[in-house]
Amino acid sequence: MNRRQLLGAGWTLAAGWAWAKASRPRPLNQGLRFGVLTARLIHRSGLDRVVAVALEDSHVCFAVAGAVAAVLRQQGREAWTLEGGAGLETDLDVVGPETLYLAYFGGLPDAVVQAGLDADLARLVARGGDETVVLHWPTVTRGYFENALFGVEGALEWAEEREIYAVINEGDRAVMKRLTDPLALTFEEVDALPLEDWAPLT
Image 1 (cartoon, rainbow, N blue to C red):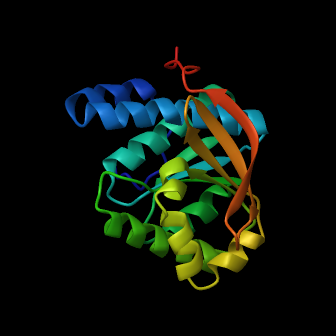
Image 2: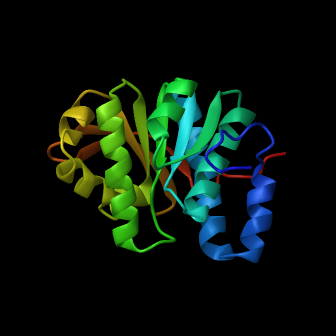
């Protein structure tokens, strides 16, 4: 199946974990665990119709995005997974999401991640829409989002027109924060879960 296609209910965390054991087990397992907590925080916030968008050609990002979508579906939310890149705007228009979860982080060189986020953010800016956005934590903490926000034409205005959150790994907690000032890139905490408070789907 083409990874650009929407993932249906057949995607499970078990598949992701099985793949993780064969390839990059430690980083991916950590990412999947944090993805579970991210999904729970998104669910607790009341956000719905979530499209988890993964960095193009990144198996790690796609697995984590798929985990987030799987947990949200298990908790009764509508959720899908899409790969970034050409055609992203069309795919989003087909789904009609209310929330975008952006998973752009490691597994590839920083320059590749940054270029992928820049290109997809430019697509989102051109598309418009009013979706709420949730950022994966390395997308923020590694500087990718900040670089894109100030490097992509129209991105700052786009950010000012919507609610943007990030789920950040802070010590022993997964913390959901709301972007309060895009220009200063300041966030305020709105919810949190202990990092140990995760479990596989049953």
